[in-house]
Image (cartoon, rainbow, N blue to C red; front, side, top):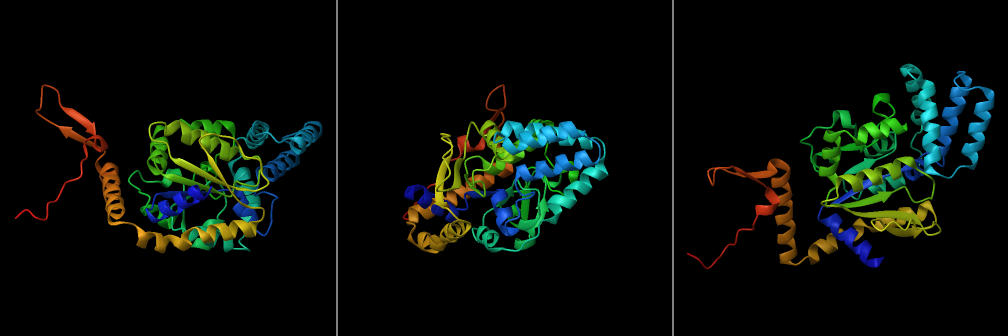
Amino acid sequence: MANDIQKIKKDLVSNDVVVFVGPDISVYTANGDTTVSYWKGLLNNGLNQCYRSTGIDAENFAECIKKLDNSVEVNDYAVFADRIKYCFGEQTDTYKTWLTDTIGQLHPQKPELIKAIGELRCPILTTNYDSLLEDILSKETLTWNKYQSNDSLTNMMNHILHVYGHYQSPNTVIFSSNDYHQLHEDELICSQLRRLVEGKTLLFVGYGMGMPDPSFSQLLKWIFNITRNNPPTIYKLIKSNVRCSLLENIKEISYGNTFEDLLFFLQSLPSFSTLIHQNLSFTERRENVRRKYLNYLINEYRHVSIFGYSNNDISLPLESVYVELKFDPTHP
């Protein structure tokens, strides 16, 4: 685990880390409010709303609540989400009001964890629907419908990208099974997410309490599917007493058992950045510069075209033909 932590610290220096923020962070920041921060509470509230609006009769409502109370499976949560979304149907205003009355009521009371995440100075993506990150870090909300194809990780430093939508824009909120399916099949959005995460180090913070979370499992499947040719290195911070997931392509790092332990862990990550940076050899520094320049060329131009070489023009991926120029200081 020590080697993994050192890799994260080194990648922080190289600007190769992308942070994903999950519901645990909202729970802590809202001073322990679990009523809607976690999926179970949000689904419970949604089912109650459907019952009050006569979208579900008393018998079905009681059955749904009983199943929800006893359920620990992500797939079961998806069934309840589908039921709630169907209940709201075309009632856009009702759906928006529900999101505002639930997610919109989460207010920052304990900013320490989010401030520590901000100190990592990495692009921040989140599966949360709320605005707690923006409120504390003074950043702007970004959703896929406003995302520009030429946005880079550097340009995103002033934004929080809500991968599955934001409550103030109900049409962006990914909630039901069909919502996830449509988003994950959108080729443009897939290419945008791929550019953000492929080959990077992804640090998942706020998914470590062991609570079932459909958005987390859906996101992992999505990332695995679109980055097969150049997969990222994925780290997930978890509580020490949470059973590991045993997923081969995720490295789990225990931070302790409390939010205070998580805060200390996050604060320790950038603390050695200056020292590490100073101790980088000249070769390592040059490699970092070369890698950043190559990433810039790939993001800007993608391919190199060769004309007139043969009867057919040739277009090659830029990374396959890029070579570092050699400089001989002794040459006149």
